[in-house]
Image 1 (spheres, rainbow, N blue to C red):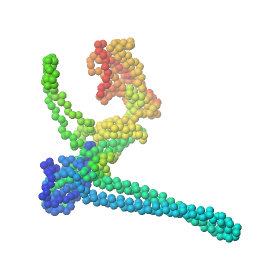
Image 2: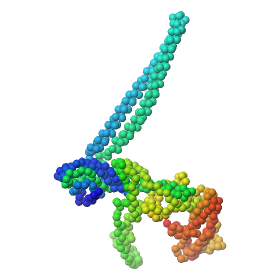
Image 3: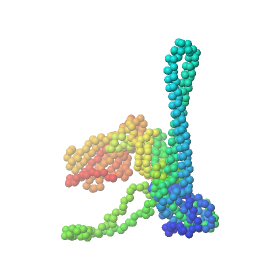
Image 4: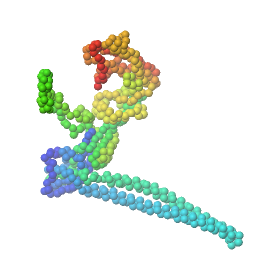
Length: 560
């Protein structure tokens, strides 16, 4: 499909001299969604147009379109001469009016059905009242005639057969009235259920009516001037960027500890606030950020110079305290004094852009309501280790080591973790794992696997025979106990102080010796790797000694 880029000079309003103007509607067909924005594509069906100059007015574009990003594609047989962009209130278009009329007609028809049901219910209520009145009349008549019937029998005016016939008639009429009331009540219950269904249908229709169009002030007109050498029809498309959209990766990690397998379900939380529904839209997720800067900041030169501090101080003491005088005495500011503005933390791909085409068209409301969509599912082999850090926690935690052997990165996002079917926790800061990179995922504490750090000796200053005034000695016993009923590969970690000064000497001793020193580049952090059978315990002896001049004080601080 042919694509035309529109420069700023082309963004002018269409001339009033055009021969024909066509008011057209469009539909969103596709969208490329970025972490903080989207490119939207719309298709417009062209009517049969004669040769000549025409103006196409697309009247259903939501407010929020970035005018400088407008592009036109398709439109075979047309030459684009100018485009325009008008941001103002618009009357409803014919398609919108027809859609609203159709839904309004359905709403009115549903209300007519409900009125019929309410009439049926009212008639059933009258039948119940009539039956109750008949029952009351029969009961009153029976009570009033009981005495007269007895006297009639005694005097012979009424025979026994006649009395039995009268009583049978009253009983039959009473039974019929009771059945009529019962049937009417059952019909009322059925009618109530039908009315409930109709009310739910009516509510859904009202929601459709509310969603079928945008508020009048939330749309703009895109005007396209074209020239056709011969009669044309078909389709033309436009694309533009919006800020009111974005997506974020979401992961569900299902770990099978027996099989040492990880099922990773990748999903995307997608949102858009354009104000219109995306219905049956092909969506591609991209990690690009087209609204960000394209180049790094300018690197300035840095000049080195020397000055006499005493001279500057002398001037400062003799100068008046006015702001202008003080400013004159300041040393020239080096380049490092000019600080670049720090942006908020965002997803960074370091030049790598990945895209994901969702397998099915998307339906998504335009009010920032989030939708969750599947990207893919991967089954990955993992290496299980139990990580113990007794300095910080008595629990031992399960980690699954994996390697990203795919061609695209696992992007930063939110993740939920399941171990053998049980939910163990969630993380809002899942870090990116680039293609070819390995990472360890945490799956919570392991019940029955514990660790402790026992202090055997801690002396400093003049507190013991083994130390002098400039010595500090600490000795520990690191233990890991396995009561889980299965073997584990354990990584035990601890730390000792490190020094960057020649006068501060540090001697570290461990038995057995650590397998890794300066873990992950962290100076003074050590790790021991060992298998631990079920019911077994591992003990590591760990100590360090610090020595420094007597005229100095010792300070300890973490390195971040």
